[in-house]
Image 1: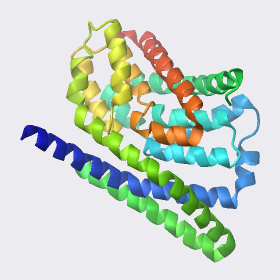
Image 2 (image 1 turned 90 degrees about the horizontal axis):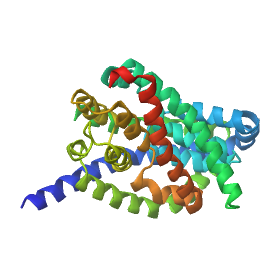
Image 3 (image 1 turned 180 degrees about the vertical axis):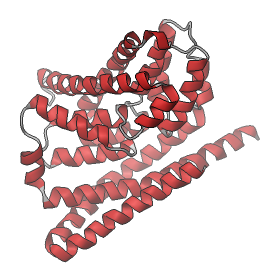
Image 4 (image 1 turned 135 degrees about the vertical axis):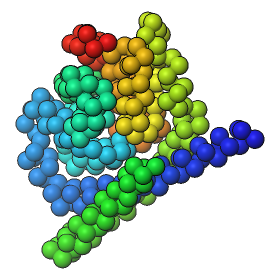
Length: 145
Length: 169
């Protein structure tokens, strides 16, 4: 009886989560499709493409400011990658999307302490850039990229 | 509940804005907008089956893991087990970050190490239910390498954060 209730509760929660993220997925896909179709050159040549570290910093900055379900970051990053943006920038964006939260910062400061929130986000930002560089260099070293 | 309802409405609001953008774009450039919509349909067709796997993994995680389960394994004297537990808990944690801030703040007051809190928050970047989608977009090798770095650096993040604010533990 209790197991049935647990199953039902989990299923309800999952369906609710899914219904909540579905418009985000569809919206994100539609938005990126429009941007990639209308401005493919501008994205890759204009904003990015100024070297590994500047690209990583820019990608990390965009991911830090952006808020939303992580699924949206995968979709956006995947489409940016198809649009010609480099893997280092995309990786930095992907990592900071989940690990750095400018939008959530006030809540984090309130709940976990100001110093903790500020230092953690700053360290996370720097680490995201290191991870982006390391990931791509590792793949290149293994000849997998 | 109300927060969840708001975030749900936020998603539909976002979709509405995007549709409005398509409308405006159609007025300015009908051909390019039609191309964008065709591009979207093609991507959606490819992504749709992966969403089924995502749904299944979300269901399993919702069934097996709750903030109270995580709470049991992240005590102050946990040592190496605490590091492992905070990484594992972060990787498998679900739901909005706000819910976890509350749980982590409660744990912090009961003596949870600052390092474990930071490690937990960083390792949340590895999303098990979303891995199929990541593999679909970026490939298996990339996903494995990135996830390994994320796990290793979640510990580094915890260590550094605690070193900078030792007296808050």
